Image (cartoon, rainbow over all chains, first blue to last red; front, side):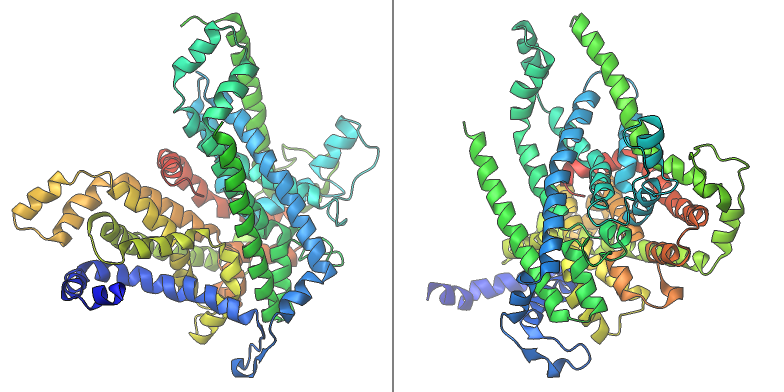
Amino acid sequence: MEVKNKILDKSFLKKIFRSKGAYLLLLPGMSLFFTFILFPLVYSLRMSFYKWNIVDIAASEFVGFSNYARVVNDPIFLRAALNTVVYTIITVPGQIIFALIVAILLNQKIKGRTFFRVAYYIPVISSWVIVTFLFEYLFGGQAGLVNFILKDILHLVDFKIMWLSNPILVMVPLNLLGIWKGVGWSAIIILAALQNVPPDLYEAAVIDGAGIWHKITKITIPLIRPTLVFLIVVLTIGGFNVYISGLLMTKGGNPLDLSHFILTLMYKKTFTNLDFGYGSAISYLLAAFIFAISVIQIKLLRRKVEY
Amino acid sequence: MLITKEERIFRIIAYILLICGVVIALLPFMYMISVSFKSQIYTFEYPPRLIPRDPTVENYIEALGKDLFGINFLNSLFVATITTVSTVFVSSLMAYAFSRIRFPGKEVFFYILLLGMMIPPVMLIIPQFVIAKNLHLLDSLWGLIIVYVSTTLSMQTFLLRSFFDTIPKELEEAVMVDGGNRWVIFRKIILPSSKPGLAVVAIFTFLFAWDEFPWAHVAIKEASRRTLPVAIALFQSQYLTKWGLLFAATTAASIPVIIVFVIFQRYFIQGFITSGLK
């Protein structure tokens, strides 16, 4: 009741009228945002409950949760989900550990910091399409640099490994690519956090005779914990959304659809098999899963900060 | 502060590790450039060589003259430029409203917009495809631009608002006293004092639009309207093993990005720290 009164209240209407300038400023952006982001979000939820007919939308048939049931019972989806989860479990800690090392090193009084920052950042700004092909070339079976290093320089193996044609081995270049491309970004964020750590804390620790390892684990990491939590959440979301590298390197899940990630499978089901309802169900399952994981991570990791 | 012996050793180790890291970060690119100057027979030589034997520019001549590479390049340039200009315009208007004006529903609008930052773009590709199809925006560069602006809008608005919030309000009061209106404030005070912020938004948006692949991949079928990432991806599937040719094309495609980045790297770092986002 109170709310209703408030809306009908003259002064409220007057306020809206007087704010028309503000609404005018929001209009172009908000109309784009509603049409191409929010509306699609809702629309896609609707599609996931239909046997969607792309040619004649009116002929689409409501099928309840059956798209979702098909997704979770599909062995190809389960394999894709496994590949994606493994990718996330490997690349998130991988990026953070290397980024932490780089950031701590860059935070020392060293010369050429700008050069190092730019150099570490170049993989981040480079295009996923291009770096995927670069890794494909480096991991090539016949003349790839990686095989050369493993076989002829380190003598770890005595044959050339066919990285790209095996659905399990192809995950190696894909995961390494995920780590390699992301380290620079995390390192810059961690470096910014490190620069806010007051130096006198370290000096006190030095007087107490603490070593470098002690300084890092007992002072640095606890102090930048909020940044690390932020990174873990953001990188996990990024990990579940891995798409371009998988699509290009496995040529769309080959061989036998065994090397899919969740989103490459969504792409194939939607745009190759034209099963739009199924594709939408996959993307909603992924979104729900990502949301749940993010909430859990934030709760768990925040709690630890308290003591 | 005294430099202990431990610290000196640590610093030497730091340099060694950092240089190793740089080699790992940059080696693939050096390799790309190297292969782009190799003729086809040398791209499969074993052991692989970083310095090409008989370097040649024939890959560049072939790649740049081939198919529609020039058109694809111009498409990318067009899409990235229009997307950047539109995004800067639209998001600075919104950021100004959020930063300076009190109006009913402000919080609600802002949080809805923040939601946009959390939705993974690939998830929206299916419904966007259906909508674009109905609006006849498929196979059109404007269809790319409009989706790119919508996608990057929330992050850029969020970023610009945080820049606008740091501008002191006293200046505006002076303008108001002199009889100026909000538009004058926006043009004469807000925009000039947030040049670094606008630069960050422009760079981010340009790079995003230049590199975007998933949407362009589904939205464009007509070869003459492809942007570079799509053209390069299809190029590779067409000329499967012509690595020299492919890497000549990718090297050429990377040049604008590298130039923009090296010139503006200061703003980049600032942008990340302010926004905390990719």
